[in-house]
Length: 77
Image 1 (cartoon, rainbow, N blue to C red):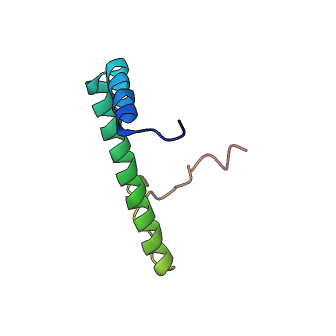
Image 2 (image 1 turned 45 degrees about the vertical axis):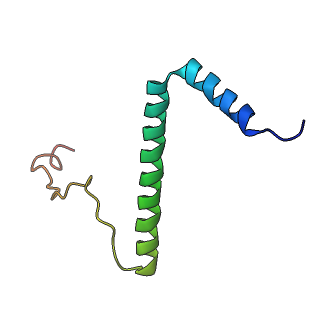
Image 3 (image 1 turned 180 degrees about the vertical axis):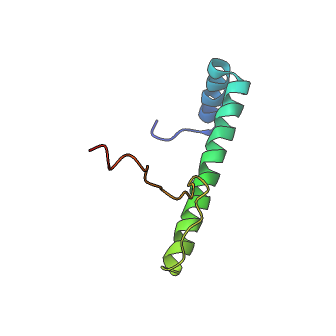
């Protein structure tokens, strides 16, 4: 009673496939695979950054701008 045989696992898999449907399970599998891949890439990037402390990681979401003061903003106070 303590261990489950292969037949128990096949029945559970069949019930899960019937409840969720194969398309939904395929989508869940691809989402999970993408998350694992992203996690591995993040870990690899973090490990590369830790080996060279002076190396800055590239950031594509930043914008380089020069801040300029408005000419009349200080005089108005």
